[in-house]
Amino acid sequence: MTWYLYFLAVPFVVGYLLGSIPFGLVLTSAAGLGDIRKQGSGNIGATNVLRTGNKTLAAATLLLDALKGFVAVIACGLIGPPCAAAAAVGAVVGHNFPVWLKFKGGKGMATAIGVTLGLSWPAGVIICAAWLAIAAAFRYSSLASLFSILIGALASWFFLPWNGALAVTVVALLVWVRHHQNIDRLLKGTETKIGQRSPSAAA
Image (cartoon, rainbow, N blue to C red):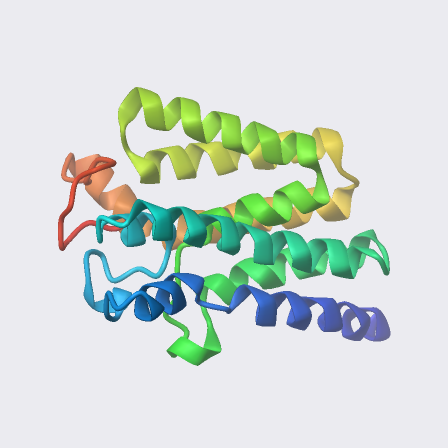
């Protein structure tokens, strides 16, 4: 058992290193928009980048954050499904808690979509479809993220072997944990809707 855990530690670390690349921070800094961590919600993800008013950078952040998770899973999956699952968890942990930013990262939704697509494209598509439907209906990015990743985690048990499904479930838990402030605001009715620009909002 010990050797097996050491074996899985390698793809986890690979996933972590890829996931910890802060594309939102890199892109906004390169575009001359300053430190995204000092704007809006202080988050490095696509939703906060969108609050700068630059839709192109927000879309690029979303795509790259998803892509790093997808690449981690596909690359490590060449060794075997357990390695893909370990890389999936590592990528989201890396995005949420990057060592380069003193473990203060994003909330993991885009990367969660990327790793799920890498593990099972049907489950990944279900997450995307659910996110779009919930966001269109309620206009809350956080609400869409919370429930779409939960739906994706449930769907993964139908499309993946147990290790992959467990990885998506753990990823969903990580997303929920990082959205704890959003959950509190949703319950209080003070959460910011999509398109609103508020210094206290987080999604």
